[in-house]
Amino acid sequence: AHSVVSQVYSAMADLDLVIYGSTGFTGSLAATYVNKKYGKTIKWAIAGRSEQKLLKQQASLDGVPKIIVADSADEPAIKAMVSRTKTVVTFAGPFARYGTGLVKACAEAGTGYCDITGEVAWVRRMITTYDETAQSTGARIVHLCGHDSVPWDLMTLMLTKKLRESNDSLARVDMWDDIKSAPSGGTLETAFGIMFGTEKGQLEKYDYDPLLKTRPPAVGPSENKISVRNVSSFELGKQGMPHRAFFFMAGGE
Image (tube, rainbow, N blue to C red; front, side):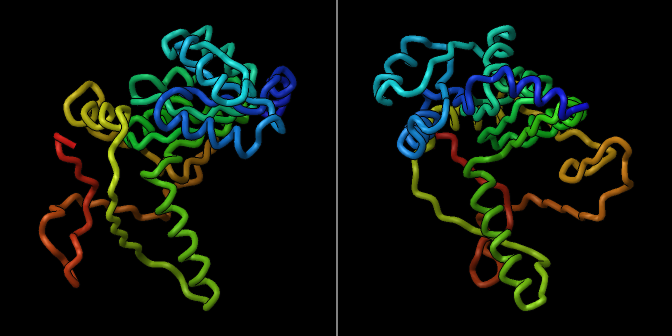
Protein backbone atom coordinates (compact mmCIF):
# COMPACT_ATOMS: atom_id res chain seq x y z
CA ALA A 1 0.00 0.00 0.00
CA HIS A 2 2.77 2.42 0.85
CA SER A 3 4.25 2.23 -2.66
CA VAL A 4 0.93 3.39 -4.10
CA VAL A 5 0.87 6.41 -1.79
CA SER A 6 4.45 7.29 -2.66
CA GLN A 7 3.76 6.97 -6.39
CA VAL A 8 0.73 9.25 -6.13
CA TYR A 9 2.63 12.01 -4.34
CA SER A 10 5.67 11.61 -6.60
CA ALA A 11 3.41 12.12 -9.59
CA MET A 12 2.07 15.32 -8.01
CA ALA A 13 5.52 16.67 -7.17
CA ASP A 14 7.01 19.28 -9.48
CA LEU A 15 10.22 19.57 -7.43
CA ASP A 16 13.04 17.19 -6.59
CA LEU A 17 14.15 19.05 -3.49
CA VAL A 18 13.02 21.76 -1.08
CA ILE A 19 15.50 23.40 1.29
CA TYR A 20 13.44 24.61 4.24
CA GLY A 21 14.92 27.27 6.51
CA SER A 22 17.23 28.21 3.66
CA THR A 23 17.88 31.80 4.77
CA GLY A 24 19.41 30.82 8.12
CA PHE A 25 23.15 30.36 8.61
CA THR A 26 23.40 26.65 7.83
CA GLY A 27 20.50 26.63 5.38
CA SER A 28 22.16 29.32 3.29
CA LEU A 29 25.34 27.23 3.09
CA ALA A 30 23.28 24.29 1.85
CA ALA A 31 21.47 26.39 -0.74
CA THR A 32 24.77 27.78 -2.04
CA TYR A 33 26.18 24.27 -2.30
CA VAL A 34 23.13 22.88 -4.14
CA ASN A 35 23.20 25.77 -6.58
CA LYS A 36 26.92 25.30 -7.28
CA LYS A 37 26.76 21.50 -7.47
CA TYR A 38 23.46 20.98 -9.29
CA GLY A 39 22.20 24.36 -10.51
CA LYS A 40 19.47 23.81 -13.09
CA THR A 41 20.07 20.05 -13.42
CA ILE A 42 17.46 19.43 -10.71
CA LYS A 43 14.19 21.13 -9.85
CA TRP A 44 14.50 22.70 -6.42
CA ALA A 45 13.16 25.45 -4.20
CA ILE A 46 14.16 27.46 -1.17
CA ALA A 47 11.53 27.83 1.52
CA GLY A 48 10.83 29.66 4.76
CA ARG A 49 8.51 32.15 6.39
CA SER A 50 9.94 35.42 5.02
CA GLU A 51 9.22 36.11 1.36
CA GLN A 52 11.48 39.17 1.43
CA LYS A 53 14.49 37.15 2.62
CA LEU A 54 13.74 34.37 0.13
CA LEU A 55 13.59 36.82 -2.78
CA LYS A 56 16.95 38.27 -1.77
CA GLN A 57 18.44 34.80 -1.49
CA GLN A 58 16.97 33.73 -4.82
CA ALA A 59 18.72 36.65 -6.50
CA SER A 60 22.03 35.64 -4.91
CA LEU A 61 21.53 32.14 -6.33
CA ASP A 62 21.27 33.37 -9.93
CA GLY A 63 17.48 33.17 -9.79
CA VAL A 64 17.65 29.37 -10.13
CA PRO A 65 15.54 28.00 -7.24
CA LYS A 66 11.83 28.58 -6.90
CA ILE A 67 10.43 30.18 -3.74
CA ILE A 68 7.93 28.67 -1.31
CA VAL A 69 6.64 30.74 1.60
CA ALA A 70 5.57 28.52 4.50
CA ASP A 71 5.62 29.26 8.22
CA SER A 72 6.27 26.20 10.36
CA ALA A 73 3.09 26.96 12.33
CA ASP A 74 0.95 27.14 9.17
CA GLU A 75 -0.15 23.52 8.68
CA PRO A 76 -1.91 24.01 5.31
CA ALA A 77 1.15 25.81 3.92
CA ILE A 78 3.51 23.08 5.16
CA LYS A 79 1.30 20.36 3.65
CA ALA A 80 1.13 22.21 0.33
CA MET A 81 4.92 22.56 0.27
CA VAL A 82 5.46 18.88 1.07
CA SER A 83 3.04 17.80 -1.66
CA ARG A 84 5.15 19.58 -4.28
CA THR A 85 8.44 17.81 -3.68
CA LYS A 86 10.06 14.40 -3.48
CA THR A 87 12.34 15.40 -0.60
CA VAL A 88 12.56 18.12 2.06
CA VAL A 89 15.82 18.92 3.82
CA THR A 90 15.26 21.26 6.73
CA PHE A 91 17.54 23.54 8.70
CA ALA A 92 14.82 25.34 10.68
CA GLY A 93 15.55 24.70 14.34
CA PRO A 94 15.23 24.31 17.23
CA PHE A 95 13.42 21.32 15.78
CA ALA A 96 11.47 20.49 18.94
CA ARG A 97 9.91 23.93 18.53
CA TYR A 98 9.59 24.27 14.76
CA GLY A 99 10.03 20.82 13.22
CA THR A 100 7.22 18.52 14.36
CA GLY A 101 4.63 19.72 11.86
CA LEU A 102 7.01 19.17 8.95
CA VAL A 103 7.86 15.62 10.08
CA LYS A 104 4.13 14.87 10.40
CA ALA A 105 3.37 16.26 6.93
CA CYS A 106 6.20 14.30 5.28
CA ALA A 107 5.27 11.08 7.05
CA GLU A 108 1.65 11.39 5.95
CA ALA A 109 2.50 12.33 2.37
CA GLY A 110 5.23 9.76 1.78
CA THR A 111 7.76 12.55 1.17
CA GLY A 112 11.45 12.10 1.97
CA TYR A 113 12.76 14.15 4.90
CA CYS A 114 16.10 14.85 6.56
CA ASP A 115 17.32 17.38 9.11
CA ILE A 116 20.43 18.40 11.04
CA THR A 117 18.98 18.19 14.53
CA GLY A 118 20.94 16.95 17.51
CA GLU A 119 17.86 16.99 19.77
CA VAL A 120 17.75 13.33 20.78
CA ALA A 121 14.63 13.53 22.96
CA TRP A 122 12.67 15.11 20.11
CA VAL A 123 13.90 12.52 17.62
CA ARG A 124 12.72 9.74 19.90
CA ARG A 125 9.28 11.34 20.13
CA MET A 126 9.11 11.59 16.35
CA ILE A 127 9.93 7.86 16.03
CA THR A 128 7.21 6.96 18.52
CA THR A 129 4.61 9.24 16.97
CA TYR A 130 5.19 8.99 13.22
CA ASP A 131 7.25 5.90 12.39
CA GLU A 132 4.27 3.67 11.68
CA THR A 133 2.69 6.37 9.52
CA ALA A 134 5.92 6.76 7.56
CA GLN A 135 6.16 3.01 7.07
CA SER A 136 2.61 2.92 5.72
CA THR A 137 3.25 5.71 3.18
CA GLY A 138 6.83 4.86 2.27
CA ALA A 139 8.23 8.12 3.66
CA ARG A 140 11.89 8.03 4.64
CA ILE A 141 12.40 10.21 7.71
CA VAL A 142 16.11 10.66 8.44
CA HIS A 143 17.12 12.72 11.46
CA LEU A 144 20.56 13.62 12.82
CA CYS A 145 22.23 14.43 9.49
CA GLY A 146 24.44 17.20 10.86
CA HIS A 147 27.77 17.53 12.63
CA ASP A 148 26.40 15.93 15.79
CA SER A 149 26.19 12.59 14.02
CA VAL A 150 27.50 12.29 10.46
CA PRO A 151 31.30 12.56 11.02
CA TRP A 152 31.18 9.91 13.74
CA ASP A 153 28.88 7.64 11.73
CA LEU A 154 31.21 7.83 8.73
CA MET A 155 34.33 7.17 10.80
CA THR A 156 32.68 4.18 12.49
CA LEU A 157 31.64 2.84 9.08
CA MET A 158 35.16 3.24 7.70
CA LEU A 159 36.67 1.54 10.76
CA THR A 160 34.24 -1.36 10.44
CA LYS A 161 35.03 -1.84 6.76
CA LYS A 162 38.76 -1.74 7.43
CA LEU A 163 38.54 -4.33 10.19
CA ARG A 164 36.43 -6.64 8.03
CA GLU A 165 39.25 -6.75 5.50
CA SER A 166 41.20 -8.78 8.05
CA ASN A 167 38.13 -10.74 9.25
CA ASP A 168 37.99 -8.74 12.45
CA SER A 169 35.08 -6.89 14.04
CA LEU A 170 34.57 -3.59 15.82
CA ALA A 171 33.81 -3.95 19.54
CA ARG A 172 33.96 -0.34 20.75
CA VAL A 173 34.64 3.15 19.48
CA ASP A 174 35.89 6.12 21.53
CA MET A 175 36.12 9.47 19.77
CA TRP A 176 37.41 12.89 20.76
CA ASP A 177 37.41 16.06 18.75
CA ASP A 178 38.81 19.55 19.17
CA ILE A 179 36.63 22.11 17.41
CA LYS A 180 37.41 25.76 16.89
CA SER A 181 34.18 27.38 15.72
CA ALA A 182 31.46 29.81 16.66
CA PRO A 183 27.96 28.33 17.05
CA SER A 184 25.16 29.80 14.96
CA GLY A 185 22.14 31.49 16.51
CA GLY A 186 20.01 28.40 15.91
CA THR A 187 22.50 26.17 17.67
CA LEU A 188 22.61 28.48 20.69
CA GLU A 189 18.83 28.67 20.84
CA THR A 190 18.62 24.88 20.70
CA ALA A 191 21.22 24.44 23.46
CA PHE A 192 19.51 26.89 25.80
CA GLY A 193 16.14 25.32 25.04
CA ILE A 194 17.41 21.87 25.99
CA MET A 195 19.08 23.14 29.17
CA PHE A 196 16.49 25.62 30.42
CA GLY A 197 13.45 25.79 28.10
CA THR A 198 10.36 23.78 27.25
CA GLU A 199 12.50 21.26 25.34
CA LYS A 200 14.15 20.13 28.60
CA GLY A 201 12.98 16.70 29.72
CA GLN A 202 13.76 13.06 30.22
CA LEU A 203 14.15 10.60 27.36
CA GLU A 204 11.11 8.40 26.90
CA LYS A 205 11.36 4.69 27.58
CA TYR A 206 10.34 2.32 24.80
CA ASP A 207 9.49 -1.34 24.51
CA TYR A 208 11.68 -1.51 21.39
CA ASP A 209 15.06 -0.35 20.15
CA PRO A 210 14.41 2.85 18.12
CA LEU A 211 17.51 2.11 16.06
CA LEU A 212 16.04 -1.24 15.00
CA LYS A 213 12.28 -0.66 14.98
CA THR A 214 10.46 -3.10 12.73
CA ARG A 215 6.66 -3.04 12.82
CA PRO A 216 4.40 -4.81 12.22
CA PRO A 217 5.00 -7.34 13.59
CA ALA A 218 7.56 -6.86 16.35
CA VAL A 219 10.50 -9.19 15.87
CA GLY A 220 11.45 -9.47 19.51
CA PRO A 221 14.00 -7.61 21.61
CA SER A 222 17.00 -6.10 19.88
CA GLU A 223 20.36 -7.82 20.20
CA ASN A 224 22.04 -4.40 20.26
CA LYS A 225 23.31 -3.33 23.68
CA ILE A 226 23.65 0.43 23.92
CA SER A 227 25.05 1.97 27.08
CA VAL A 228 25.69 5.66 27.63
CA ARG A 229 27.31 7.09 30.73
CA ASN A 230 27.66 10.83 31.26
CA VAL A 231 30.79 11.59 33.26
CA SER A 232 32.99 14.60 33.87
CA SER A 233 35.06 15.71 30.89
CA PHE A 234 37.46 17.65 33.10
CA GLU A 235 39.22 14.63 34.60
CA LEU A 236 41.74 12.94 32.38
CA GLY A 237 41.38 9.24 31.66
CA LYS A 238 43.70 6.67 30.11
CA GLN A 239 46.72 8.05 28.24
CA GLY A 240 45.70 11.58 29.21
CA MET A 241 42.49 11.57 27.17
CA PRO A 242 39.17 12.84 28.59
CA HIS A 243 36.65 10.40 29.94
CA ARG A 244 33.69 9.63 27.68
CA ALA A 245 31.03 12.30 28.02
CA PHE A 246 28.35 14.21 26.16
CA PHE A 247 29.41 17.55 24.68
CA PHE A 248 29.69 20.54 26.99
CA MET A 249 28.87 24.09 25.98
CA ALA A 250 29.58 26.98 28.32
CA GLY A 251 26.74 29.41 28.85
CA GLY A 252 28.71 32.30 27.35
CA GLU A 253 29.76 30.49 24.18
